[in-house]
Image 1 (cartoon, rainbow, N blue to C red):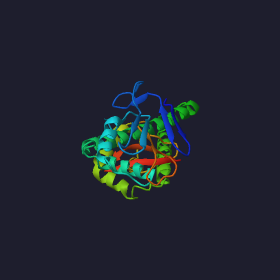
Image 2: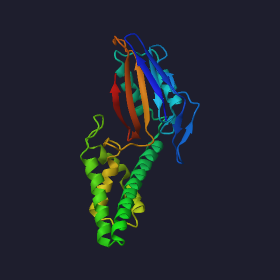
Image 3: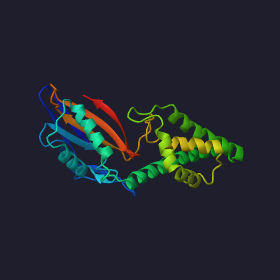
Image 4: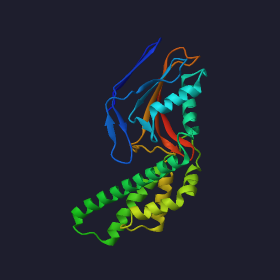
Length: 261
């Protein structure tokens, strides 16, 4: 668990953090208790950045990312604190040397697989509850549960709007690039469960929406939280901007602003 504090008044802002971070990878996440989570975002202007949840982003340590950004930023300054946040987002999306295509594709496939496993787990739980009541399940009742669970997930994602920074057609780009692999993952994940063609299409649409929407109650465990705070040139008082970031797919960063104070 991360503990972070920000104290603002009309003259300054003070940031404080513990030193525990999570490193996410192929195996179980690991927690380290001696990491630096506070950095200057600019060498020349009063802007800092504080991290929580993960010590790395798509496999690259945040410390490395911030150092490279700070060097690139140089003497550049912005009128508003939020402009630093937006510039930092654009830097992440354009940092192809840090996040080459192979890394982005791996992120997409791992995210899709994890969500398919989540849906399958949801189905298994429903089946277990039903068998406690009926003692024996028919093929019809199994099929009905599978359909109901998939439809529930589909409706949740379909009714959620795309985040403002990503176009409505974005899911089609994901499907065009990764469609064959998605079909393979669906078959492998649900091989022993009855799937109609309609259910398969729903699953494809669901997983292609993972990179452009934020349904309520769904959180990627590998997310990173960042807090950018300080003064823009025209800010009379200090400003704090908190962002939630998941990853980059097809050169688009999935993120949302949690609050600006």
